[in-house]
Amino acid sequence: MRQLVLTVFVACLLSQVTAQEFNFGLKGGANIGTPYGVAEKGSKGMVGVGPLIGAFFKYQLKDKWAVHADFQYSFKGARFDTPVSGDTVYEYLTITPNDTIPSKAFTSYRGRVEGKFANKYFDVPVYVSYQVGKRSLLLAGFQISYLIDGGNYGSADIEVGDSKHPFTYVENEPFDQSDEINTWDYAIIIGTIYEGKRRVNLGATFTYGLTSIYNKNYKYLDNVVRNLYLQLFLGFKITKTD
Image 1 (tube, rainbow, N blue to C red):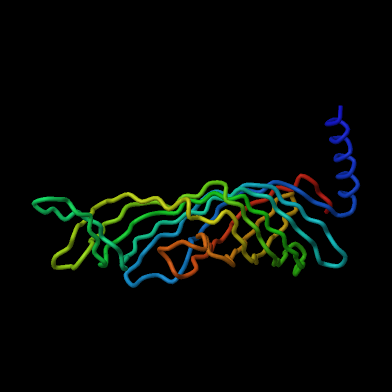
Image 2 (cartoon, rainbow, N blue to C red):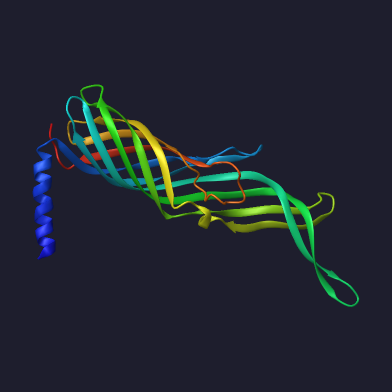
């Protein structure tokens, strides 16, 4: 009974707001981009393309201004291939006639890492728009994203020790740094929307990450790695006020 009363109340509320220039609908499209940071010399990669699906809400203000809020699932992926190097500690056993002694050597490593990102987010972009034509809007705002499932994994070819006399060498060693992806991500958003006559919208937005996708204490990178993605989408208005 309580759920029924709540449903009726929400329906009545929406019917009143709709009369005051409130639009909402569904949207779907693609994310195109990559997490990006200062890359090592010799790095290469490929941008990712993933699905984007959700709902949009628009409240028309006076004149040509409007306020928007979207709720969407988005997949943000990419591939990378990069050289790596740094200092490390190599642990080994020194065998003597009478004992086996644990030993350490302070040395360096070098190699190459090949992997991919496969991060799934729940995004909430909130922005304002200004009408520049009969049906065209320019928009700008802010986006907050919650990580539903993080993916950062691949394989590495690593040589430890002096290049002429290495301690050890591993090939196709799997790695998984998915747990190092930040739970929250923040971005600024800019873009444009064309509102068609038959309930269909066409849109393109760009998001620029304000923080690193990795946790603050992630030891393998010193620089910020930001989400940079272009969203291309179609929207279908459930309500229609024009």
